[in-house]
Image (cartoon, rainbow over all chains, first blue to last red; front, side, top):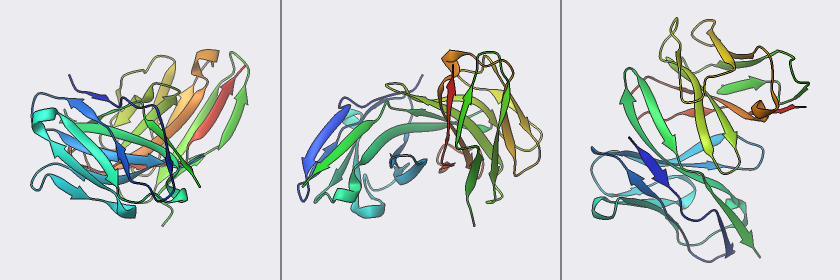
Length: 115
Length: 114
């Protein structure tokens, strides 16, 4: 069974500060890992994904994430947060399951950005 | 290119009423999904359609039915709404069933059942 843990439900950072959102996964094989972002009142949008190769992946909006197999982690980072980054962030693990993509989402981390 | 569209955006029902949530995608994707989002629980899969003409149950299918009308459209029906179905519903699509696919989400339908 696959599972995702996002230990921080709510995080507050100052604008311009660095950000790290934590994600731990459980999956028996090589995981396919995703970060999605949900702005208020909107659907989810893919920030980045990892499935092989370089363990540091770059995404949209200046985000990056690092896959660490030894720690079963896929933490999301941004060096300098902007007010527009205030949103909810979901880590997810996916696999092919009988012809469809089975994705397990974490419960999300809500990011508040203060001036 | 609208991506994934959903109607309606908001809906209030009384217990026992029925309704259909509509979803359409214009990306020629094979797979489509219905999720519900509840506070503290992330997104949970209700039903999916791996390809046109096929549908199957996800994690929380009870109380719902779906129809894959054609490649573009995938509807979700609540036959007899219950307060436990108060939630935000998202439709998503992906190119196929690969574990590495990106899912594209609609804006959601916020449903309240009184």
